[in-house]
Structures are given as C-alpha cells and as structure tokens.
Image (cartoon, rainbow, N blue to C red; front, side, top):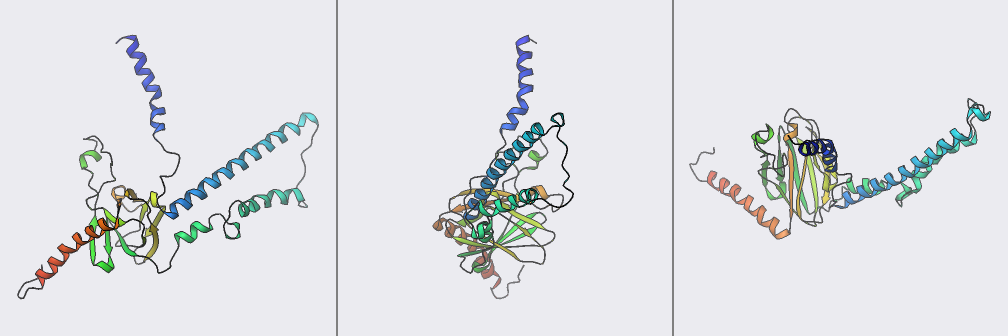
Length: 280
C-alpha cells in the first residue's frame, strides 16, 4: 500500500469519531405545538441562567482560592455556629433567582408550560384514544367509530444488519396516525398489558399509557408534516420496535382519510347484518 493511502486511512480513522459526533443535535427538534415551544423556551432560558451562574461561581471560587491562599497567611474560617448573613445570602440567592427569571405567574418559569400540558378544558375539537400493547399502538377515534393498529414495518434484515439501514430506520409503520392541522386534539392513553409511553418530540408531549387508567393530554399542531417518535417506557423485549408516526394534514385531507377508514368498518357491519349471515 502506498504511503499516501496509508496516511489517508489513518486520517479517516482519527477523524471518524469527530464525523460521527457531528451528526448529533444539541437542540430540540423544531417545535410545532404551543407546548413544545414553551418547553423549548424554558429549556433555553434555564440553560442561559445556569451558564451565567456556573461561570460566576467558578470565577468567585478561583478568586477566593488565589486571594485567600495559605501562603498569604489566611486561616480557614469556622462556620459551625452561628449562621452568618453571608451564608443565608448564598443559600437564598439561587431560590430568588428562580422566581424572577421569567414572566410566569408568581415568576415561576415552568408555570405556563405545565398549564398548557395539563389543560383539561372541554374545548377539544377531536378526541384520539391511544392504547399501548406489546408491541404496537392501537388508535381510536371514539366519536367517529374508527379504530386501527400501527405496527413497525422496518425489515428484519435491516435490524439484523443484513441490509443497509433505511432513512427512517425503526421509525416507519404500516398505518400512520393522521391529524388535522390547527385543531386542538385531546389524547387519552391507556394500555392492554404493561406500561408504555407515547412520545413525539416535536409535539413536546410524552404521556405514559398505564393499564387500568385513562390518562390525558392535548396538542394543537400548527405545521403540516410527518412527525416521528417512539415508546419511551421500557415495556419488554420489543420495546425498541414501537415507533409512533403522525401525519399532520389539512382538514380536508384528514376528513378524506377518516372517511376511507370508516367505509370498511361500515361494509363489515352491513355484511354481518344480512339475515342468516353468521358473524365471523
């Protein structure tokens, strides 16, 4: 092998981890719901405040180490008792900072995000029931009488490294959940067996699906597109193969999709209603 080829291989090996590291994102996915935007706002705000506090405390510590070093004759202070005003100041200052760094009610930064996430007003324009099962999702529109399952469709050959990974590896399903854009949707989660968790990062929502309980949250997606997530609660050996795929479409497209799902159900019901016909 030529020396130039050896050098190129060595450089590729050295820079490989750097290239892989560059693929990681250090921010949230683009938020498409009010909850996701509020969550991102709170996250960025706290990160900025944390960095300011970190460097301020680090600077004070380094200065104190240098200014009060033993070689200058300083002796360690005794803070056993009583508590000094300076100590109380250092304890209460971070707490006070949390109360004033945002515009929320009483100054609590996460207040609006929590209110949005736990909004239980009866003004939802659509209700979707999500049932977790080992290992698939069951979606139901109770008012419309529509129910269907959503399973992962990634080929087993890709999982076993016998084929190249697809673009949406482990995040592709046979039946996507379709939702209308710009409408408030109430989600109800439950489970048939163990605890699952329905999670779509771009929506800013994650809710556990607990057997025997109905838990709710809501979302209002402002942007059309296809959004992907996964089950985020360890639920068994196929836990990593429970993707969530949601397609957000204009209202007319959503209604057409829903009507297409209704037709097979109505046809089956009509067939069973024929006199002398034995239901399957």
